[in-house]
Length: 236
Image 1 (tube, rainbow, N blue to C red):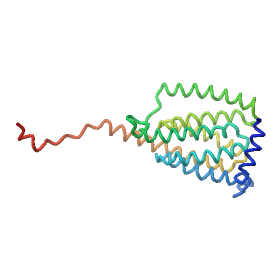
Image 2: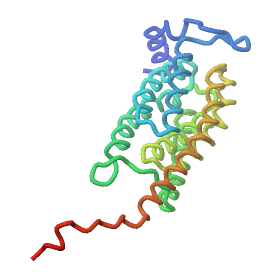
Image 3: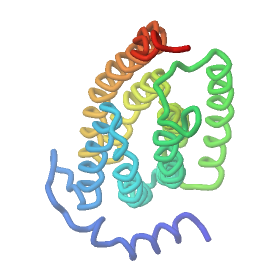
Image 4: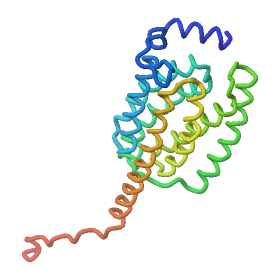
């Protein structure tokens, strides 16, 4: 089945979300699906930035709304990305609660040098492969931009799942590219949302750095002295 036929079938199923115009921004109508994506997306990023675990279920709902919005707009890689995000959301939810040592909550940490090399290799290979696939098998009008933003988002989400501070740099880079891309595709409200995402990413970077510093200080602090037992003097 071609992407056009899938797009037509999906459009019939989710017509109320795509056709219900909630507001018009700059002469561009905004659908109910895009508004719901805006609300859940803003709530999710704020929750991530402030390290609240409920970001994951809210983010999974956001993935559903944006899958519909992006597929209808012809952003096929970004729409498929939402399925991956949904699966990563389930993993991230578990990891934040049980991904630390001995199934404890996961602490904030830095991305290691070996992890950066792995991310760089995956990023280059993933962008090349996805650009080729979009050019060859879809009617995407922005294959390279769609591929780059998709891969950056996947790498950033992996870091977010593992509570890596540097994941925020990847999100900021993705947001800088997403804003003009969505405006170009007439998703003005989503473009505005990603401007807000950029600001929340700066907040998240600051908060996660502070959290990592507190964890490090707590681990390096000397243990508190143990008070002598009141029965020690009578031992023996």
